[in-house]
Length: 375
Image (cartoon, rainbow, N blue to C red; front, side):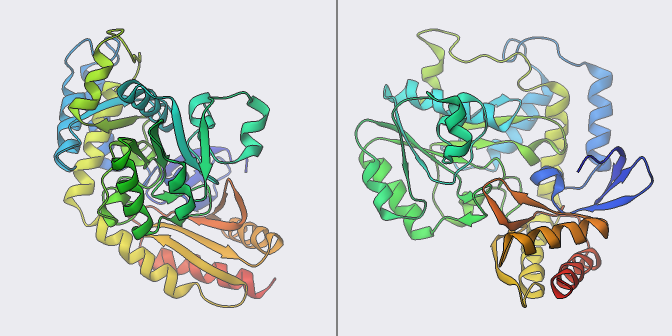
């Protein structure tokens, strides 16, 4: 889009030419509390006045890291006892893959077609799209891909499988929620083979689906939970969470199994702490559910195949590539930022900030319907 950004506030991004755009993709599911939330900005200023980076992650005790980690872990199941903080989503997945190999002593992974886990080599190895993988082969060996929501994929899991990695809601694959019964069967199959289950909630986490994490909709708890995007309220941060028992294996052979210089940066942690506090204290989970209801009830008519997803993580599938491009272009002209997912050119990503008003939602709905009508 090549927009030259001047500033951003709330649900809007402003260009240097003075035009405003309603950000209906939240910087790709990052700015769930909008741009420049005052509580996050305040936390940033306060931490900047204290200190920035002081040492490689884990060497010193730093209050922002501890406060954020404690608040987050208090919200998670008892088996989610420790977090390792990194800088991004793909780094979280890389750490989770390494941890699974170290804990199980195995090297095989099961992943899913149309998945997306990042562009670094380990994450790319378990991403289920050949178009992104092929230029970088060979990647990690012993990765087997199954069909998402298909029972046949369960047969790929064996006593040699270190972990199964998946998104509870496939994001770039087209906003495809996992089937609850299938996910329960997958958890059971992993248990039978002492295989770890990794949930990549980088896009679905921190309130976007109407729960803090999407796995809460399913009643299925992973062994390792990966997160990023909306975690820092606009600041770069990621993490992977697991049990103390699993994390113990990162302490020996060698003693520094996984290190990061900037992981858990104190300024990012201060923002993440303020972001999480606001999410928990506000009405945002309910708001995500309201957004789903309003969008699904409003977006009906000719040219629309389906609106799918959970909460404010939605995808609008249209009848053709040409129609999809027309709608995105028309909305852009009217000052609304929409976009595709990586794996689909017939599906429009709908991921508004959770602070969005009904008036703004209806403006988007009416603009989309108008674009469909004049195609």
